[in-house]
Image 1: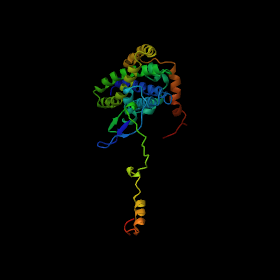
Image 2: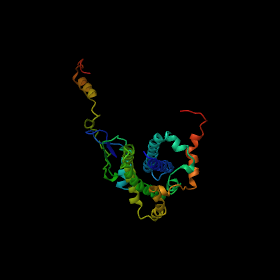
Image 3: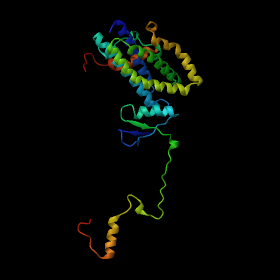
Image 4: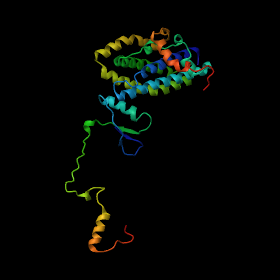
Length: 197
Length: 92
């Protein structure tokens, strides 16, 4: 795996971790019980994908997935601002979900064609789970299409989705990231020095 | 929601999902009953398609029509008493 690939995998891992975290904020308060289960499961999958991607890069860098996920400072993260947003509006959440899955499908296709069999293999595995996410996103898209609130959310978020597919555009973060980072790494940072698991 | 656990087995009622349309029902059914490899097939049936029957009238108490309802032992005892014979030792 070359340095460029490491960087790319880390970007995707950061996206998946942060989006998984944000999506999981709907657990318990999604519009219906069935949706609660479905969306929580999607959030959990994204974090699972982040973990697998971090592990792949961690082996190359001689570190661990946990260190990559939780021991960097907020500005070291390479996630796209769109995944950082704390969205309290279901229409916006679904708009982001739809746009994210659209972009994710494109980059997974690219990764599946990687010369590195480990990268290609993991991308194929992740893609099999993402297929469910895409069906879910499409179902909501079809249902909400034509709703002005959803159309406005899509229009507002769509420009930000471009960052998901372009490393050059990454690096900037929203003011919401430090707060999220604080929450996300709190448990890990609270362990007394020298603790071993 | 009906699910089949293994091929060849009957599909059995497993629960229900609340969904806005068939597409949502399909996705929620897969999510909750299918994607962990726990089912080989699912049937998702709209509630409106189910004909429910739960009024089973038995005005004349014809208990011999019921699967649980025919106490043969009692009847046999009564018949023996009428006939004045003892129960066969092997017949209990």
